[in-house]
Length: 156
Length: 209
Image 1 (tube, rainbow over the protein chains, first blue to last red):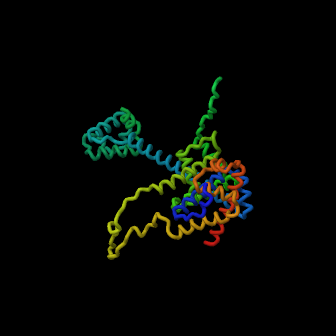
Image 2 (image 1 turned 60 degrees about the vertical axis):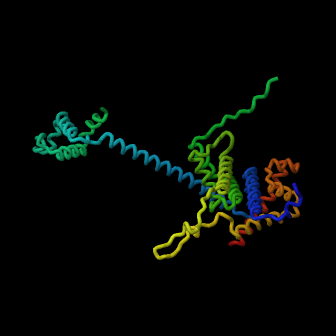
């Protein structure tokens, strides 16, 4: 080490580097010192150690709370995505009108009691327009009358 | 003769639930909370302008978040939660300092980025952002801080030796070896340096206020 190092003119970058090295060395000395010694040392210097500890507790608690809330939001979003895709998978009606007519025919065959829910005109199956077929299926779906059948259909 | 087997301590990475519980257990330990804050404070001081507005509490908060998100695993057999968070803060602050030092920036002429508003006013986006280079006030502040610390130990040869060695880039154990002093003696000298650095900092804060 050079004894005269302190008197050598330094550039702003030298000062920045020196400050950085000194502060980091002090930080490491803090890491090596026991919490009890640091507490006593700072209190003797007049620092409000209680206030520092209280603020630090809030910092930790808020970070933990944010993390827990984020996990909850993630879980909720995953549940909603899953529920939505399940709903679409299980309860979507067939797209083609031919399949829709087949579905309505099998509904009435398998659950003849449902025929009582539709108007007399609708019971004349062949006379129904494509729109009527879709509308009746949607109404039956809303009533939950198709749940079993659509699940079966989707499983196939 | 058989060679001694190296001591093998298996790494036991804590689960997120264990890490959360360990952090929550710190809420009631004022001494450890205070230590974490002190460490964060000097680390932020150490990286200077690379902190880019982050303070000690931001650094600690980030260390907790990284731990809970699993980015930084806690080896619970090797270190307690305070030691772990100190390690994460050290790594984060070093990374911040490096990323500012090595940040790649594209070069543009100011005329290439100036815009004209509907009212015909010429606006330069460069005016909206502070320069990454330290300004004159910052240079003066750093200069004064270092000078004040050095002046404070002008008559204390033992601490002056440590300061000089730190400035030359030696680590704690290297300084102990270089100066031929024990760990306890080194810690005693560092304690004097730490106390003075804090009092200088508080004096500057009081002047600013």
